[in-house]
Length: 576
Image 1: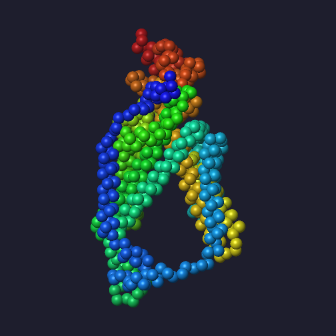
Image 2: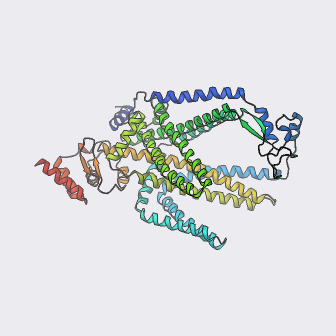
Image 3: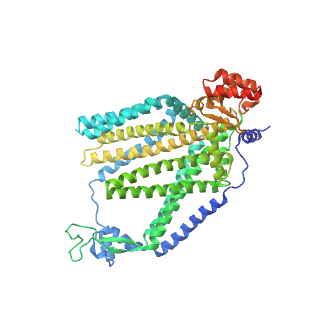
């Protein structure tokens, strides 16, 4: 049998669908109609635009002649032709050299970031923990001793103490997090095309944002220049009633421009989140094919296959998922604006609104979390979005998985590591510029600016790679849950790691046939067959089970749970 046939057979038995019908067509049509409306509206906005007045107002904001009449073009040209100061030209060449160094260092740092979790995950994890606890303490001492700021210093020291307490309480999860990230790095090393997928997705976001940004600007250009309302009527020059200088002009967007700019912004946000959903979908599809493929078979073409599913049968489902995320982002922004407005009006209103915003944020985080696992389920099964969401939640509930432990800690460790490495690079660049550039009045400012630029650029690269690793962790974790549901051990090494996720106390595992088994007993049940050497990749556990009596012996011999013992006794009573 060929590798392709073996791959198809192995993936099919795992639940990964190779041939899929088109799902959620209405989602594709809805997104397409929004994009079409944005393009048509943008063309109309360009036709109605008043670019010249807007440009002149921006070019000469302090010229009263611009409001409300157009100033002579000669004045505009004279304004634009004013020579710029030349004092900074001697810094251009060294600045260009340092920009090249920053770009090369950011890419190198990104490779080192991946290598760190691939080769020495323990060093990366423990180092992040030390930074998380020690950095606030160091900054607090500096603020207290050198700047005399007792309030800030005390706050930072308390924050460090809270971090230490949390790490002590959750210390048992660090080993798990370390191994999860190592598995993720290994899976990413096998499927290196996922990095290219993420890069292409980011380029799509940039292109889409540029296109919709132009359309939004076209909407804003629909308006006219008006005198600034704060400007005193009879005063000479542009001053207010108190004599303070103000801008001479203001730009008033008409009703069509405001409506279209808001609509184009929403479509741009939807498109950005759609590309993010596609990235998660493709990553999950590739990881699932790697995870469930039979031993010795090639997964060549898995990335192309996942792209085809994302842009074909499941595009409507991804449109729905990104629409939900867009709605969450819009409502979150509205609540944040209301919170800020209430805080300005009074302390009591600000406290109440902040509490409501806090509760709403918990709900939003839950929706985003469930949407991601729904997308992973869509990538594997090809189901419609709502059905995939229901099945994903049922799968996680049925197998008593403590998903929060997998969700929180890897993200925290990756973020802290990224900030630490990016901060180190920014500090190194700033010091390097300060020590190597020629004497100049602006060297200190340039050193700070280039240090901040290098920090931001490195942080973007590292968080970008961190998001890829997190996507791989989530997809691998979901594949493990599917293994549990099928009572199979496809990859024993991954089971050995993720099975150490602490399950809720006393949790029971409900199997697809309706049987309820103690979570610890079922874990020990799997471990027994792995230790006996009877498990082969891709074969279900029940294929090696000798019978009900065998199961009871394992439950009673390996379980330290009262609930597990009760399950064994109940099974014996039913047989009698």
